[in-house]
Length: 539
Ligand code: TNX
Image (cartoon, rainbow, N blue to C red; front, top):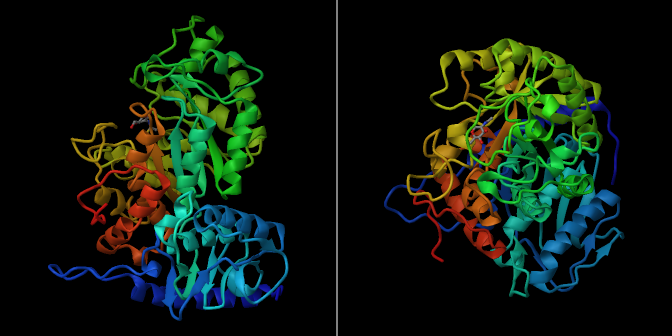
């Protein structure tokens, strides 16, 4: 049944739903086991990451069998159905045909504008598992997709394997009602320090989508490489992209390849946020075009890992022709609303020049229909109206720098939080971690998870926090196995901070749920750091 209710009713229902949710959450958040006693095994309903807003167990639950059909009628329903079928078919060996016929049995995917679905917002969903059927309902395609990910985590980990496995494939009985805490849940991949192929990026997208991340921030340019083709300045990619840290061959995405990444992410309800880092971190561009340098001399390509030595020439008009062209071409192939202009570590740009540069560049982003995102140094200039600053400070960030960010937030600049000593996936876990850096300290799993985005920066109004990001810088990382060792298990923790209600936040409960993810990573071929802080199952 599809109804189109009036807004009054919608908001009334929203109010009551949230009350119920708040009540449900406290009963769900598992209490830590008294020490010395073995924790009970987690039921499938209790092991979902990120923790859902509300879980009510009950009844036998639906079993997927050879006779199961997937009922999906609208294009959005079918897209979610196809995605689910692709996950399930290889391991179950079942046909799992899609049908657009309505019916009371099977797996039912339903877009519905009923008030209680609309009340769950643009990404919320409900899963109802009974003996006769499994129903995922949402107001949006994104919600259905997140519901599919939740169902996936309810099934035995072997479902992730790509060869036939033994069932049974039962989804625990009950109802899950879920919606995200924050609308911006992101991970960043630095494809500039080391280049990663389209297939490697797709693999990372799949891993982030499993945990309901909805943004992929691509760090597309830095001193060591320029990774995106720009027709009006072709040498950026062909020359500026021709190497990487350590001197390897580097690479860049053609426009068609970039669009392929964007489409692959979109099919997983993730938006790409492209970053061109300016005015610092620009050696690859400066090496490609001599005229971008104040002295008119192109520096050599750079394959080391120092930061802060390069700057676009702020006083030259050609700099803004260049930036205009780059932003125009990038905006044209980016459907998402945000364009990241970097702005960090511009140590070779004077404060005056930095402010002047940002004053000229931010309007260009708006001119091409995008919203400015910048590293939090943007708050040292004048953030444009509506701009978003990404905080990457850490426990030793100076008070003055913090205060600039807090004041900007009070004045309307929204924040994405990616504190380096919490959410940076490239920080070593411990002194023994073979990969990664340690300038923000060691970041073990607990430290990475155990903070609250709403209160992290005292003085920031809670509604200024738009969400969180887990950045993965790649000075020391050059393979998918490297990425995975650093992202797992910390990426799911940041995803949970972005998605789950604050009331579910509890390290003891989280580490148990996290441990239950490991067999899934094994099945997916994802290597991870077996942190001693987490009670991993024996292999
Ligand atoms: C700081 S975070 C940087 C990057 C480095 C990273 C390494 C930020 C905005 N700038 O240039 O890759 O540290 O952890």
